[in-house]
Image 1 (cartoon, rainbow, N blue to C red):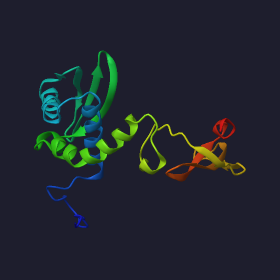
Image 2 (cartoon, one colour):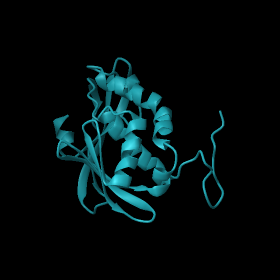
Image 3 (cartoon, rainbow, N blue to C red):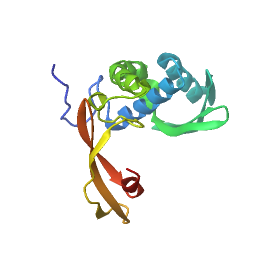
Image 4 (tube, helix red, strand yellow):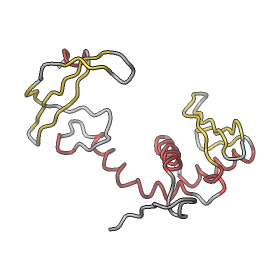
Length: 183
């Protein structure tokens, strides 16, 4: 299957999103999935909030806090707790519901990672890049001597890449500072 790659200047083709638009659609998709809101209804509520300052979508309150020529800043709350606040370009708001088509493309990836999260003890061979907050039962095979490194924030830290394994495979995991002594 060929991927569409845009190498030109000027506007992107209709069915391609810029990196910034993709990130915004990803944020919106995560909110919709977390709060179990239908993507088309969620998008309609965002547009309604853009037009009328405020909208409610199930348990989410959406407020348009500021409008500019190119974008609008939205605040998403759930029972008075802030869920997110970010800017959405008017190109997304004026166009057709891009969120629905975006969620259709990401659904298979999300479903597979969610299933692994639900397992009581996922196996190493089921892990995929980008998965977070995973608990794996594994044997520690090796913990190399830690090295002192300078982080991008200008601080010093100790790091070690431990080798762990279960019956399905082995991986290296990065351990930082106190994590090294815990394992």
